[in-house]
Length: 583
Image 1: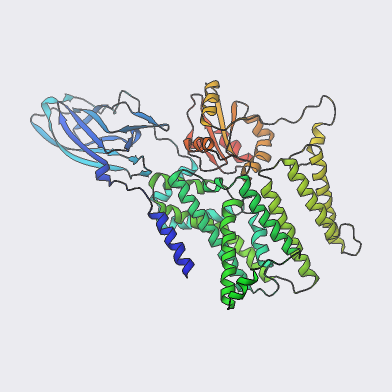
Image 2: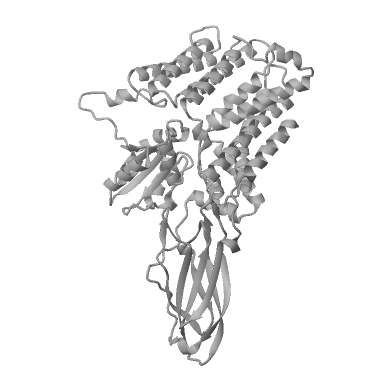
C-alpha cells in the first residue's frame, strides 16, 4: 500500500507540473467595428499566443448585405504554418444588394483558432458582434461576390494519421478514446517491439519453480504489465510535454550492456549455475511469506518498468498521436491515460502468456530441467538481440550462431536416444545456426538471409542486387545543407536508429522490395540517424516533430513537407506503394 501511495504521489506531481496557461478570454481579445464601408476586425493576442491564418473566417449574417472583399495582414512562418502574433487586423469591405438609407443592424461573426507557445492549443472560437451599418457607405452589388484577399487562402491541409488520432482524442468522448487506445495496443502487440517481452515474462514465471499456482502466475504477469504501462505513460507524457524521448535516452551502450548482463545472469540461473535470491541477511529479516511475496512483486515490477523503456522503444501512429495531443494541448492527464490503455492493450497478450506458463508447468523431473534450459536460451537470445543495437552485425551473427549450435547440440541434434521430431527440430536449428556462422565469415549482416552474399558474389562481373542509397545526416545543419543541394527534387527523409527494431524490419522487408526500390527512384533519399541520441540529433528530431523512429517524411519539389503523408512506425511494402502513389 505504501508503494501504491508513493506511485500515486509521483504521478500526481508529474501531471500537475505543467506551465500555467491563460484562459481563452485572456489569450484572445477580439473586437470589431464598422468604419467607412468596411468592418475592421482585430484580434489582440497575449504574449506567446498565436493564431493560424487558415483558421480565420469573417462572416456576415444578412440577406441583403455581403462581404465584397477581405484584406488580411501578411502572416509569419512558424514551423511550416502561417500564423499571426501580437495583434492581427482584418478589413472586410461590405456591399449591398439593395440600396437603403440610414443604418441597419447586422450580425458579424469572427472565427479563429490559436495556440500557446508553451504547449497548449485552444479550441476554435467564433465571436459574434452586432454592428450598425450605414447604407450610404456601401456599394451596390447585384450578386454575391466570393470573399477574396491579396494573399491566397490556403485550403485546409489533409492531416497525417497521427494528427487525426490526436484530433480524435481532443474531440471524442473519454471512454471511447480509452477503449480505442486499448484496441490499438492489442494491434501493436503483434509488432516486433513486444516479442522480446514474451520470453521475459515466461522466464519470470518459470523461474518461480514447479509450485507456482495459476493465480500467482496471473498476479506476477499483471504486475509486470502494469509496471510496463506506467513506464510507457510516464515516458510518453514527458515526451509530449518536453519533446524529449526518455526511451531513446536509455538506448546508450552502457544501459544496453547493463540490461543484457541482467538477462545473461537470469539465463545462467535457469541453467542451474546458481539460484537468484535475496542475501541471507535480508532473508532473515523477512518474517512472513506475504513479505517475501511483496518483494518478489517489486522485483517483477522493476523488470516490467525497465523492459518497457529499454526492450521495446517503438513508435507507431497511435503512440505518436497521443504524444502530439499532449504536446499541443498540454493535457497530460488524458494523454497519459490514453498511453496507459495503449500499453495495457499491448500487455494483455503477455498476461495470457504468463498465465499459460504457470498453468502448464510440468511436474518436477527431466522435463522441468528442459523447460528451464529452454527459457534460459530464450533469455540469452534477448540479451544478444539487445546487444545487436550497439555492436557490428557480424558480432551478432557469431553470438547467435554459437547460441544456436550449442542449444541444438543439447536438444539432441546428434543423439539417437531422443525422439525423431525433437531431433529434427534440433537439426534444423543447427543448420540455420551454421548458416549464420558462414554468413558472418562472409560479411553478411542479415539474420533472415545470412547466405545472400553467395548470390551476389556468384561470379565475376555479376552485380549485386539493387539497394536504396541513403545520404546520412545527424544534425539540422547537415540536413539543411543536403536540402539546399537538392532544391527542386522530391525528398524522402527517414528517421532511423540502430536500436530501433521496427527500423530494421523496415530496412529488411519494405526497403528491399524491388517494387519499392523502383518507386523511390524519383526521390532523393536521406536518413536521419538518431542512434547517438546526442543534442544535435535531439534538435533535429524536435524540429520535425519526431518523438522516436521510424518516421518517414516526404518533401515536395518546393521542399515543403507533405504532412498528410507522414508515416509513423513500420509500414509494409504494399501499403507503402499505395502511400507513394498518392504523392
